[in-house]
Length: 364
Length: 90
Image (cartoon, rainbow over all chains, first blue to last red; front, top):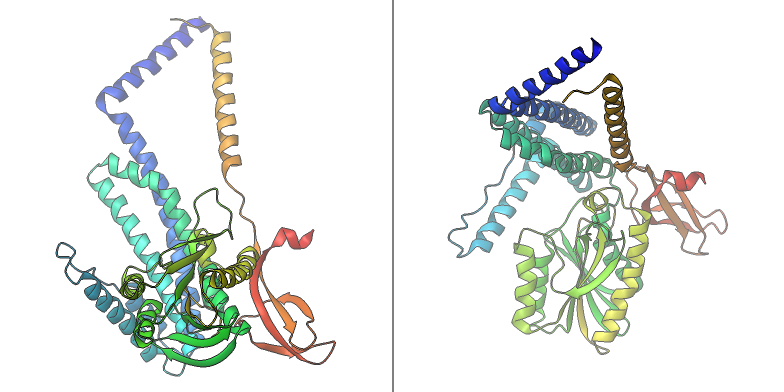
């Protein structure tokens, strides 16, 4: 008797399975499961976004802003439209123009809201608002694809989104945690380039110093060579315009430069060690294009050797508080730079060293 | 194809065991996130005295942070970095 029941149940299961497969209902169930999972993750993103928004709001209130909501709303939806790329003529100039205009407009917006804050405080607020903006953008895009997928019964779209969610969540968590550093002004992993540049300045005998477009140029004498150190002006959250400034400096020196070295944090591949140092050729800078091309153009015009030194780390390490391993790698990189300079140039040579990255927490 | 009760029970148990194993492996696969705390390394420019302290918001590299307990020279922040919490306990 019991065997009959088991047999009946087995057959019923098979029949149900066949019906599900032939009517496509199994995909609908799968779609529901994906949709449910994405919704859960989306609510996590929303809670992160809300937490970050509240933290930035508090910071603005501490700086005397009475209605921080207005500024946050404005900054959250701020965007830059990419230039036309089917006509490549002048694309770098157009892109540079848009980036500079966007940057200036954003800074002006913050300055108007907190006129009494110092440049350092303003820079922290600007980055905090940018992070909230990025989180908001990710939230909106994920929500858009989820709702579109559900509306159109597009299970392929939902499947793609479900597969991409772990990566998206990792990026969101990275940005969420990075706010700690940007609200307190602690050096981040990406500050390692400016940190090496700053340590180099400390070692040498400083001859002159000037600041152009949020970027400092320090002329110093070290190891019997004239070294120009370029880095974003610190200790605020600032990346400066190292490419543009380097181009102008090379022109000012009429191409009389024997070597250009760029030092930057680089994203490591999975399996690579954090803090690994690698030497190479080219401009180590991760901007959208204008700064990098300026370095390449300046060195190509006068045939100046262009070397790069990178310190490896992942995205999280690059925008979170600098790990001790990365700081120690910076110390090693400093010695490495000096070694390259001595090996590649003769005494009395002129060298430009550019420490690329956000100079948060690093002065000079 | 008709299975007797024992066969069904064994099959169900095997399926359950596979499910539990899969869940356990998935749990093991997730890397545990280590906690990091920010610290600052302060040095005396005069006598070279070094000490690691808790980071205070707003501090930055090269900031003067009081007097040296040994020679009364200026204490300067040499580095700011984060260290693993587990490492500190051991």
